Image (tube, rainbow over all chains, first blue to last red; front, side):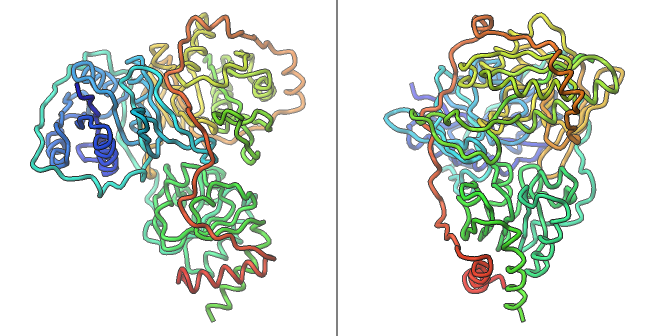
Length: 329
Length: 256
């Protein structure tokens, strides 16, 4: 019997999260190599429009896992519904995007099914009939091939940007869509979620910036932010930061780049004293060019940099500002 | 409120790491520190206790060296500590770590259990949620604020791209805490002194082993990442590097 790969696409408030196409692309790639069957599922209330959209892709079947209790999202209802579904429709491999919503419920779902999830994977390997998944370790300093030791279903979540969403292949015709109505009994849902909101109106839209100078822990003190500001001004760019800088209140939260902040793709991303933790990288790896200045020659940021300077940013930035000013006149 | 804080010792942020001989983990001879989000979790527990009174208990699973994390927590104000002490705890997956913790606290009743949202070494981001499932408790992840109310607590969850959500959660519950939820305190001299007299319970592997199973996932191989980009390192004095970089910005990247 052919094994099944199930991709659970993500929807929020009735809209498909585009990152789901990356997971579909991952599922298609693994299906092509293993010869396994690829199916997709979407969980929510009234999700038929989304499953219809997913059915246009090259998948053999799409399931609507439906219950009014799945809206709004709660980890209790999602884990309950998907467990019920997977018990009826067993899958060898279950793939999802590594979003904040998925990481909220997938460890619960996997544990409830006495299995495990390999989270935040960036790729896979299929060698000698064995599947393993690559993921970053120690904040990106190492990579590891991780495999499942149990029987499954095996849950895997993929980091944003690990696969190309636009490479998700369209199918020959629309795949069949099957409704799976799930009963979520009273008492299953314990949390009461309120409305989703944005803290403050975003003052700066960094996604439109062509040049971004970004600072990390290496800036050391709040007063040194001024130096980075001068560099950004000299380049005609915007100032941004990694999470710890905003946590410290040295720059406002709306200048934060990374999974909890903005995702940017400027022409130039100049990283000052940023080591390149995964949560930061996912917010800026789409930059057309990356320049990094860091004192640690093994900082993961250098892995994705076009130009790298190993050294003290406080020595390098002042002459850099002068040279930029000269070049501009 | 009686609060348990799960803490992990991880290599220091800028410690140079080397692979072990088997190529499955790092060599142990590095400097360690507390996992950063766990430090914020502890701070939040101490603040909740100051507001609502109660007790803060800290727990870690790791070899003898991991006791340092508990000592620091006691010095900052935690009331007592539990140390699951064995080298074997280093190699556990998140499921087994959670099962070991659950077994170690089976005779206690906590109102809240905190973990950091993820560890800086493996980065599972799962142990807290798994622990909630094992204990049959509700959970909420990536928490930026906690307010007690009549029915339980109202927490502020961080979502992606600058969005947030308040969620009402009944007690007891498990929360995973985001870095930056509060401002960390330093241990005082008096705190450090008092820490030495606070209770520290040691739990041996044998005491919790029956609750554990085989790891469900396995690191086959760990290695240095292959470069996806052709990185050019610019070298020389600061002045020379500045000149070289400006030349690249102007002629190669065309941003000046």
